[in-house]
Image 1 (cartoon, rainbow, N blue to C red):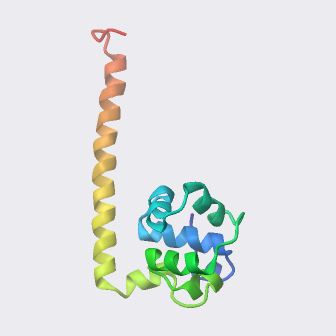
Image 2: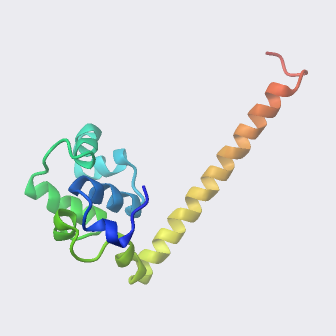
Length: 125
C-alpha cells in the first residue's frame, strides 16, 4: 500500500493502522498477537469494518510506534517521519528489511531448484 504525505491525513483510521503496521514490519497475525486479539479483529479494524476501543487504540499505537492521535486523526508524525528522525529505528528497519530479503532469496533458490527438478527427466514424477 503506497501512501504519500498528502494522503495520510485524509486516510481512514484503518488505512493509518495498516500503514503503521507495515512500517513497523509486522504482519497482520504478528500485530494481532502482540495486541492479544484475533487476526480477524485486526483485519476488521484495518478495513474500517469494526470500531476500536480507546484502550486497544492506545496499546496498538505503542506496538506500532505511533501516537494514538496520529492513528485517530492523521495529525502529527507519520511512521516514515518517525523512522527518518530516529537512527535506532532506521537501523532496525534496515536490519529487518535486509533479513527479509535474505529469507526471500533463500526461498527463491528453493523454488528455482523445484522448478528445475520438474524439468529434469531423470527425476521421477
